[in-house]
Image (cartoon, rainbow, N blue to C red; front, side, top):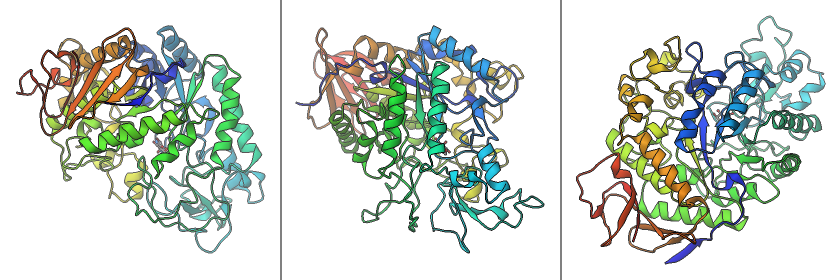
Length: 561
Ligand code: BGC
């Protein structure tokens, strides 16, 4: 038995919270087929009843929606498709009433090309706003950098679709966009950019936001000498797939980003109530993640090593031990994340022949996951992660075991990755399909209009919230029970030991209660010890034929002795 994590004595709320991610376009609507803030407010009790402590809202700012709202035109305004600032205030107030904290998504790496700064920069090559972005005069693209969504990371002003007949029709300068051309990268060396974002932080903190999820936190600072770097940096997995001898990228994970987060930490600390900063950083060296969560920087970082880990014993054991060790070394909690709006849903990803990060979307002519296996493994992975110390991120619909929508027609796709890879990648629309609330209503109750911006698969009828609430053995009721037990047993703050068995076996300890054993079985069943009292089993929802004396393959059991 080896202790791999000591019980946590600090009590900031985010250290052991269950945080539920809401993707506003697809959670719930109060009107038409697109989700909105009033819709979210009206359905928040679902999240509170699940046992979550906080919500993280993906962007709802004014935006042309060229990248699902991660292209912000005005950081202090709500997009009319989602409502208005008053709706945001009501949402925050209702969440607080229900005991839910609210984490707002901050998108500081780039603005929308419709942001007033970029519009001013486009209109006049001598405008001071040009310096707020990365404009360069050159015959060719200034570097060979690739956009995360495919193609070059540079666009010539005169090549923009809106150039014809505009004042910038003959402007041959280039601008940098690590994502879509509609998302020009900001120049964080400029004091105006820094001032603007601290002011934006204060704006939302004053409105009651309890924290921020920081989009592309590893991207803000670039090596100003702009050296070439021909490698593709992947969404979520970063440089994981690159050969080991590839040099560090000049556009990602530059040391200068940490000064920015120190500045922001100081701003948040002026406010009461343990406001939190959460880093979304895709890094190639897992040891880099801890740098973002040193005590004077962010509060926590998404654990993408856990998300991208193959569903295998050795890999899980390693990623769990490493994550706890590295985060403990800087006093930060580990997070356990399995899905978000950028990856194929866990219930499908785990059903593929090769588990891990998975492809960027799945279409009917690509390998189809085994739905039962995927669901079982996703539940097992959730039951494992939920027993571990630290905090949990759950993406809307995971509690329902929603699979990826794999039959979406291409003409409905919106993800820029689909267009920029010329269809080589399906993109992320299949994990962003509106939630099924009531089985017998049009669009499964997503909107009063009976419509949803992406069609929901017919099979989701059986997965609707009302159906699952009425079924004791449903995935939803399993998650509710699991989070209730996690809270009662203080699993998020407990000590953790690796029992050093030939299978995955941890022991969670906290004074005043029995030790809780956590066993995950992968391909082979694991025998349970005599007298084991089962506290929770992911097999309750996805029953197998294996008897009670064993942990069935692809499941997790919590037990006491
Ligand atoms: C968000 C993505 C978005 C990208 C660019 C990300 O990491 O999660 O959805 O496309 O940042 O803003």
